[in-house]
Amino acid sequence: MSAPQFATFRRFVLTGSIAAVTATGAWYGAGLKMKQDIKQERQKAAEATPLQQITELETYRANLMQKKIMLDKKIEELEIKKRKEERRRLKELKRLEKEKAEKGE
Image (cartoon, rainbow, N blue to C red; front, side, top):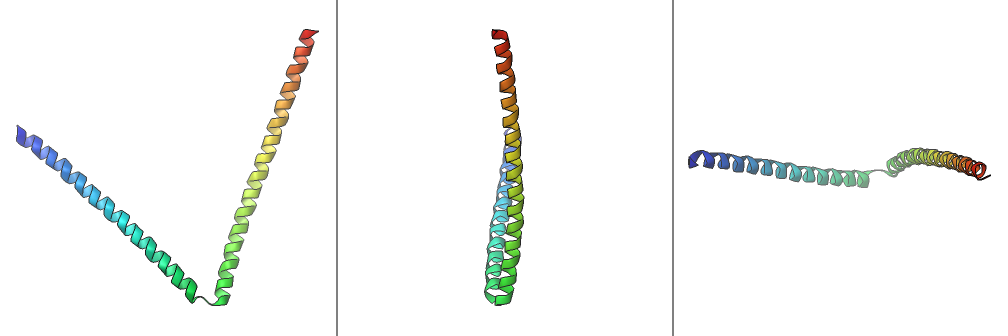
């Protein structure tokens, strides 16, 4: 009876070990790939001519400006929404005060 339990236990241990080794290898490989990509980008930037650097910086600036415009638009929409909600609350408060005043009379 103990042999099947041992076989089951051994199977779980082996499966877990293989999964752990695979996950660790994938994680380590991804880290190496990221380091390699960063190294290539730095080398590419160092070898770039001033004109290429200017072009890259202008492209980067244009992307940042697009993001800024999108964020400004979102901020404006949130402010408009906040003002509408505030007006709605004030209107509701005035209505409640008016009802209270009418009941009190």
